[in-house]
Amino acid sequence: MPAHRAIRADHTRDTLVVYQAYSDAIADPALAAGRFVPPFSMTRMTWIKPSFLWLMARSNWGTKRGQERILALRLRRSGWEQALSEAVLTAFEPQVHGTRTAWEQAFSQATVHVQWDPERSLAGAKLSHRSIQVGISRHRIHDLVEDWIVDLRDLTPTVRKIRALRDAGKHKEAKRLLPPERAYTVPDGLQRRLGMDRVGRS
Image (cartoon, rainbow, N blue to C red; front, side, top):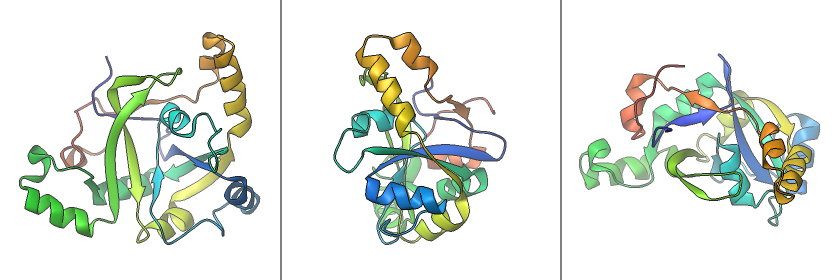
């Protein structure tokens, strides 16, 4: 059984993939430039997710308005772990924060937020284990865009193929097209900060 809270992602020794859903107006210029450019906003928080199926549930497989394009962002692991080292959970947890006052103060000053949401199945059902979602504030957006992202890729055609197979009841064929995700272990010092379960080092 998967750990209740553990990061699962498509990753290599140096990089990790997260997913986001955008409109054509944001996705097309970004893909053409190889980086995020206007009208992508550098002044608001953006949430990145290493769970492909969580984003599929959130965007209804790229069919929600303004979420039609699914992009894979390959990040430097150093940037990803920098973000996690600054993260504060979006909800108070005594075993992590000690007191509610301490959490409130940390949360108000945080440049990165983290929350754990139920992982999803191919059919969109909520599973018992959790998937991480990381909110990058306007104070860190420039680092994400200019330094942490090393590649942008359009997964929209693949998403449509998987959705069509799933809707046709061809779940085995659909699962073969899913991006690979395996346990990603952050440095030991971050596990308590993120309220994570301990998992073996990858």
